[in-house]
Image (cartoon, rainbow, N blue to C red; front, side):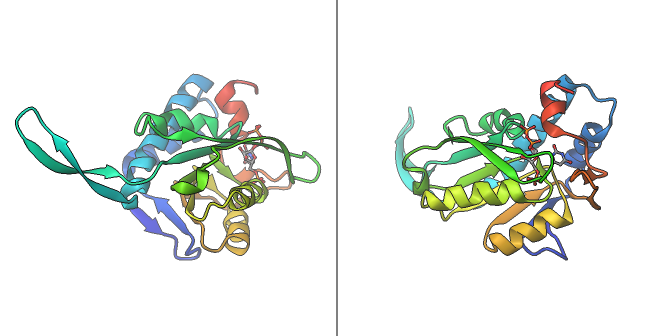
Length: 215
Ligand code: PRP
Ligand code: URA
């Protein structure tokens, strides 16, 4: 149940009841960081299962204990790229589905005044462009962080990039549509708006703080 947003053709929304149930529990201000983290990883795993349905496969010979036959293997190496910190909160859930994925990291934080991303770390596989790349961040607010990270990936030659988040704002998806029109974004929700502090409303607060218990 991944539906294309009627207002944002670059965005697909997971309307699956199990994902929506977990999202609602995550939003709850009473949810502690241990539960928040498990729910987020569970959602990420469910999302990845759907997002990976178009990954290319190659026919491969395999010898079972009984006879030789053919099967399908994933054609290209998959790279997950969480944006630090909060993207890490979805990565284990996806690795649970695809343990062989490589993991690159892009470290960014939002300047509190300007709300623009400040880069502090980047480590990516040298051949990252040889397969699909999944950019991971639970929050797409102004879109500044995601747009910056997508630029970094493009500079590394990646053209097969999609983004997965948990909650997006209309402002963030519009920004991504403008900066990266071919990049598909999948999310569990597009919320109402941003507030004066650049937080998503109703949102879930500061994702990094809620994942890591640094509130
Ligand atoms: C949060 C979030 C995104 C960014 C989204 O990170 O995880 O990376 O804000 O905001 P934007 O769309 O306006 O750029 P934050 O800067 O709070 O850093 P943290 O994950 O280290 O807490
Ligand atoms: N970053 C967050 O963690 N939450 C928001 O609502 C916006 C940016």
